[in-house]
Image (cartoon, rainbow, N blue to C red; front, side):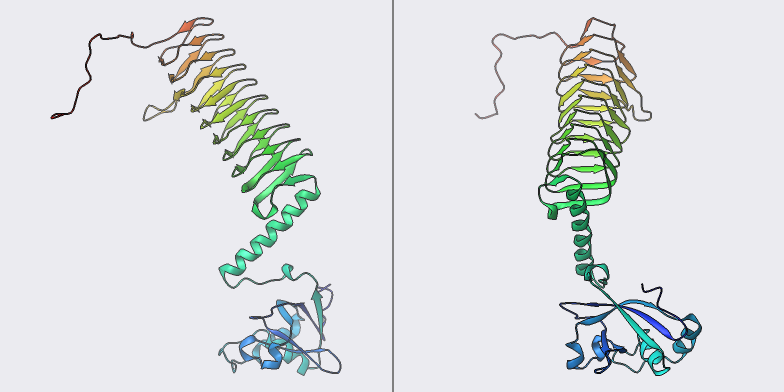
Length: 345
């Protein structure tokens, strides 16, 4: 509408009525005709003019052929000693031009930002709009005021539930029946159907297969692909790895630069030692492997299909299929051993 207004004798002006117009230039209209006569800035306004609630949004459409003339006539005889572009309105009226004011009904669309408080307010306005759009599309938000979309959510299904303090960055795709717990961060990731992401988990540049469970306190780093029905538990970090379907990494583990087969169970405290100080190497864990707790897998290394790794092992060589492999010192019990005591005790 605004762009359709201007011609050689008409100027278009976008205005809005504010509950609190403080800080904005007021629209002064002719008392009889109600035509716009000028814009008066806050510092130059009289008490009566400050009571006006219709303000300038800072958006105008002007006839270019006449703008140069009006700009040349501006002066700085005002309270701030500045050249006000808004004085062009009064100059246009003096030249016999008509000013058509188009009022915006939603003040949030045209609010200005002059400080960090106003910026934070508009950020909340944007977040609330995005939250309403998601809820209208079938997403359940535990508290729309505690949810941030800093990118785009692509909905690939219905019945999605998102708890408080969840942050979405980049493009995030969510499948059907996804549950996201509180305090999670999702960035540039794809989440399949029926996935549960538990509290305080971070997923970045990764894909999560359907019916998988993540967290709590899990970190899925860039380059990770999880298959269907994968469990990644508390304090597990996975980086640049593929974990195939039905595998479980439930507790306190680091898996980096690895390929994990299907139906693999990785015990608590297992880590892949993928960095030798200069180069990264890969670990391959084939299907149906069972890795006992507190195991170190020193890459490059391959664990053969259906093999078992004894708890507390440090594996530095490939393990054969279907066999138990372990490396740990023999347990010794010393009879009559006395625990050292502090001197003088």
